[in-house]
Image (cartoon, rainbow, N blue to C red; front, side, top):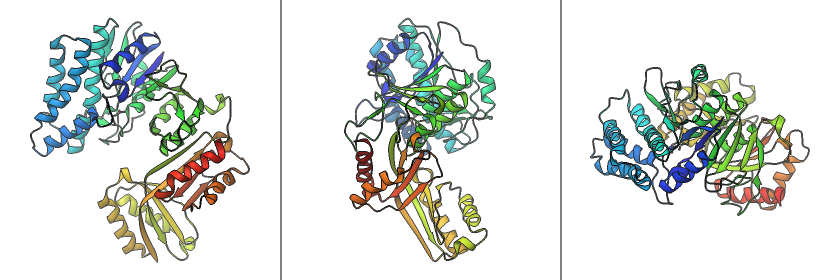
Length: 451
Ligand code: ASP
């Protein structure tokens, strides 16, 4: 059995859904279909998830939501019309859209989560209707029925381990496709909580593990994962095969094709992942496999970069001698619910790298104030933008000269390195550079290694 997950661009309109239908029908093993909400049809288009968030904002601020509600209904209606679904098939979906505003939510965050999740919740219902209408038996399955229990984190939830026990009991019916909405689960109190953005990949991976799939197919809009961002290097090398760990590091550091958290369930269930293109399903795509199955070990598999980081820099003489110094810093971060990503240190210096998408300015200001007051460092700086470049490859384990291949092209291009972290991970070297140097640095490293 295969779990096939289709992303937002694969379901953006009726024409795309027709492709999805053909792909699913072409293989009887594609029994479980996980869907995202309809995504962008063209560059300036708005994803349904974002329309849902606008709708949530209107409700919270007591503004008239009728315009955004009409826009949401029109998107689903256009898909239904493409297939000529009977008019009353949409009544139920439209009623659910209206009902969202009348429901009571525990907090605003749960309200946001419920609205955002309805992008996929309603789409899965619509997709099941379309499949049945076109003659392929399909059943919409609410994640609740599958036992998707998550923790109390409304907009960045994590699955509770016990969910897998429930999932394992679920029986599939031969000849029937299950259509499951991605992106969310339910808390023990019954509230909807979403994974972080792009989280339908996580749902697919959880189901692949929970239902013991032979393969997790992740359909998107590219024919492979490329060794570097094609916006930086046109037509870069395609990665035909890579390991779970390589994918996790690359997606963490900016490869947006696959959610970094979605790797974990696949690793735990030892399910191979195949990234494929909905628009060119015959292309083999990229296989993501356990390290023991990798056929061809390259020194470097991919180079990723992300500007979503910021850093707190601290200089404090004799930092290395002061027992409990880092503990005090960590306590401050915990006090303001700030999680740090990396913390490279020297004898008198410490850099705390933070993911900007996970904190707000108030939290940062509070942390800085507290560090200043309680630690009284000699220097305390806030670096609002910090680029991380990750050079990843299984072949990097114990390879002599790996760092030289990376640093030499940077030197030749006059790029100064803010930070290097080698050794924490055996398969990657992490670099910190100024955002202005980011693209040039990636280009220079790629050209030196791949060309
Ligand atoms: N629709 C959600 C988002 O836009 C989740 C997903 O597409 O995976 O973030």
